[in-house]
Image 1 (cartoon, rainbow, N blue to C red):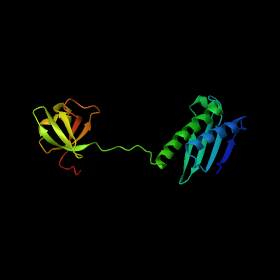
Image 2: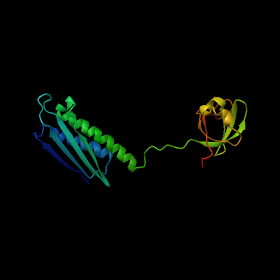
Image 3: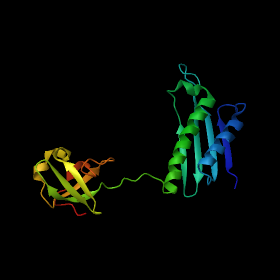
Length: 187
């Protein structure tokens, strides 16, 4: 289904090639998120100020299934926006960024933070120990890996969260950071 495109120019005449540039940018938006229903671009020349001259602001409304994404570029402090095409470029760049974020959320592609591995101390020596993770793997850790110097507070059976090293130590998989878990922890 073709995208319904509407452009509005306020307080100035449509610049030559503006229509072509807007269409090119809308095609780029459609590549990012093909389900766009409509795009409304409003370009406006701001009130003239005797010090700054004319500046352009560009607002873009994109309707997508279930919502609307809006970019309103009103930078009276950016002298580059005295050029309509620079203001247009910046507004579309911001819209592309927002649309990528929206598309990622819709596809379930957003970043999630996994909980750090969890386990119990199964062996303890004067300056190192071993943790058995919930999935049964055993990790070596040194006393210096325990945060806040709480190595002496650990006993066999103490619950901990830990960060596993990417490379194994000579004693096998290693935990580089160990956080003792208080008794209030439920998982």
